[in-house]
Amino acid sequence: MENAQIYIIIALCIYAAIMVCIGLTSYKKSKTLDGFLIGGRKVNAWVTAFAYGTAYFSAVVFVGYAGQHGWNIGIGAIWIGIGNAILGCLLSWLFFANRTRKITRHMGTKTMPEYFEKRYDSKGMKILAAIVIFIFLVPYSAAVYKGLGSLFNVVFPGVETWVWMLLIACLTALYLVAGGYIATAYADLVQGIIMIVGVICLVIAVLSHDSVGGISGLFKNLANFKPLPDDQSGVTGEQLSSIFGGSAFKFLCFNIMLTSFGTWGLPQMIGKFYGIKDSAAIKRGTVISTVFCLIIGCGAYLVGSTSRLILGGKLPEGGVDSVIPSVLIEVLGNGTFGLILFAIIIILLLSASMSTLEAVVLTSASAVAVDLIPAISKKEIKQDKQMTLTRILCLAFVACSFIFATRNIPIIVSLMSFSWGVVSGCFIGPYIWGLFSKRITKIGAYAGMISGLLTVGISTLVISLTESFSAAASKSPEMGVCAMAVSLVVVPLVSLITKNKEGDKERVDELFYCYDKE
Image 1 (spheres, one colour):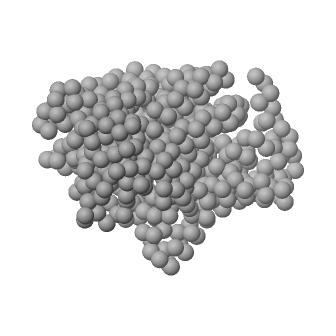
Image 2 (cartoon, rainbow, N blue to C red):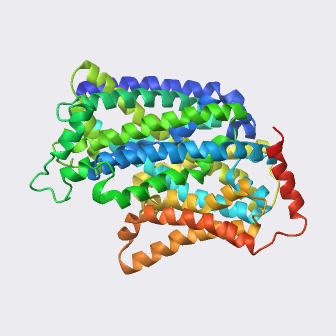
Image 3 (cartoon, rainbow, N blue to C red):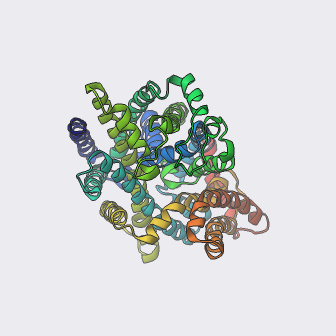
């Protein structure tokens, strides 16, 4: 392990140097608010595609979801990766990317709350959206810290977890504050390349392990798997080898829907479409991002599905969060090549998490600096002051996320379980219907946003009172999916029975004219 630590430290130093250089060289391109938040709307296909993909997958996916679902479900967990690539990536780019790029450019909006304000002529909706983003996305970034901290704690058991989280926070803050979206986008390109190389190498190494025996051996060995006598999970070889998830089929479907359709309403994902330069870049970006997500998503869950074979059916001391780190140590812990590959995989997980972290922090900071503070103060704030405020808030949100992750504040930990579903459930209906239909009213959009929030809130309250809060947290995927469905249904229904104020038709017609320009 000592040799592995040396290789990892060397790799970390090289990686950190590259990230700092990207941040410093991007500073000149991020001196305006447009440049800092959306790259001046001149970002090319490769950079945007990788920015989208790397924001999608973090260490939480690898260490948390892939480890947990691969351990408990087996080979069927791969469907989550496939669903993420097809539903969460491909369909999002096909249906929403170009329309989002055109209308946000036409309106001059740089954030999701700004989009709601100008699309529905509602400052109140802008404030509500900014508050939802602030409350639920900052805790989400704290979960990213904890995932990375758990990983490094396994590799460096003598170092406190908070030390690693602090180093990650400082590195992220440095290049994010210096270069804004441009820095994060080009960093994502580098991180994405590392992720692809790392996942491919990891899959090959895992499939080559004696306990797995290649693709054909994987299915055979999973089918023949016999749990240890003290294993109380009830997971059998039949379950692990079931291609459709066996008894976990329903749970699998809800997780696919939440993690896939959820991207359709998440501001840190949709925001990637604001800065892409033209329609041609979107066509190329659609293919690139989908292939990227297929490789990363399927690779992560495939590795997770081999975990019971590689670890002999014994769950590590750290629980499911330690499954993937333990698999890495078992597969790559010996030999010079294995140690080098081990270091690459650690950087892969670091890259995945930092890309997600920077996207969430930038989204949260801009929601407060650009949307919330000017709306509440009712004063026009000059762009240079907004620029400074956004940089300061980026630092503040990185610091807050770090503190929340290290302190284990109960309310923050609880919010993490619901953040994805709540944010997407609030925004997905007003956002998507606002892109495609002129008939959506402000009241309809408000109803969709509030109904998505209440779906999760009321369900959580009822389950917590009748059972327990932990039971409610375990049902957060189902709540999130229901919130998204309710929002998508409520928006057009309420719009059918309500009207906008007089003269609003001309304003909406003018907005939709942007789709006919190119």
